[in-house]
Length: 359
Image (spheres, rainbow, N blue to C red):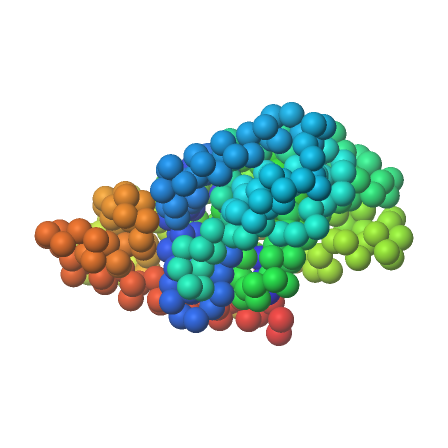
């Protein structure tokens, strides 16, 4: 199993759209996928389930999220029944947040399709992020609760994989460089940077590169001073860069330029590989060939704008290529269906890059 994050500290770059559609196409290709929503904005949760379903999950666990387990009978039938239904990632992290033992059973994930499951998020994840910040220094002292707090997200992915035999856990994140994303990105196997063809994405790569170097240094220091037993709770390898994508670029009417981009967009797009080579530490991308560093994942497959297609996908809780089955009178059904070809091309390149992690 590989845990993969789609991450950029700039919003609006297609992070959630990419995570959702990559998960769907991999599932259709026979891979077993778990989406882990670690963005408090819950966008990918609302891609995968109805708002009423998510609200019901929240309401059922509100008391515990707000007040902890102080007056909860954790041996009682009500609590046992609660664990028999889908819970949010914050609920699953709550025992660590409160410093008590973990649940004896794993609540079932929400099933989107036969091969695709979801652990939804909720707005309260900032509470867990605060605990990460409070306990961060304790990790270097070998404090068990601190280590558990930092590594629990990865552990949850592993536990669900043991139960459901996932090939990939796809993690959707918020667009910031805070404590929560620090532990997510530092404990996944690989990450993808989605970009817009603009100045802000170039600065986003620069920011990611700087903090990633510091995060890796922190975790490396921690591993070097901890006992072998406590070191084993961390991933054995440093997170690896898998490549970048360009999202929502306008399409040029002629085909005189390779990526079929207008000059303004191509001007920024061609600078992305140099920004990666300059700011993303070479040690987290040595497994990639020079071409994999320079060329977007899937080349130009998902590069051009999808217009309102993602909105329709969220409306019908389906990937874009399945929207015509829901909207019978849609005028451009062929274009919707063709998105599957594009995401399949993207997924094949993604799988090729993931394979380099084990070579």
